[in-house]
Length: 187
Image (cartoon, rainbow, N blue to C red; front, top):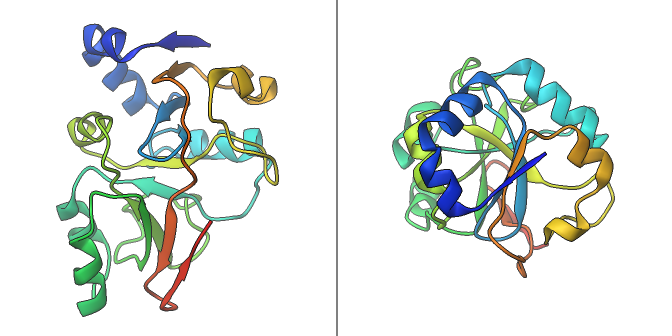
């Protein structure tokens, strides 16, 4: 696994964008913790993340390129529109999805989708991609999430092409706001 700094990412920006579009699995910083990702349109890559995390059937969230993506691909009521005003931020909004082809069918096992738009510099990368990426904590199911490169599970590291390293993260996973069931989950 290659470790890239923010500066190295800038130097190799077009190459990294193309690799992500092609389906590589990678780790990136967020506004909360580190996430493991791939193109949310690549069913094979999504499956590899499921295997690495030992998470066969729970839905994954996606980091979206823009608020417009959410408006185009998710059903929004008045409450959903109000929550969009909180983005970017440390939230995962659970919304009903409009189109089955907005993400690979194995991203969400339901008619809903968790969407994120973090307040973090990496949002520009996702915006430039123009497609959503899977974003889920870097850990095996039931284990502690990654906060630093030193506590990355070696079995997960083996399946990752690169890590964009931004130092130790001291946050917690994003707050889940389920707008379908009208509840907030604090983690």
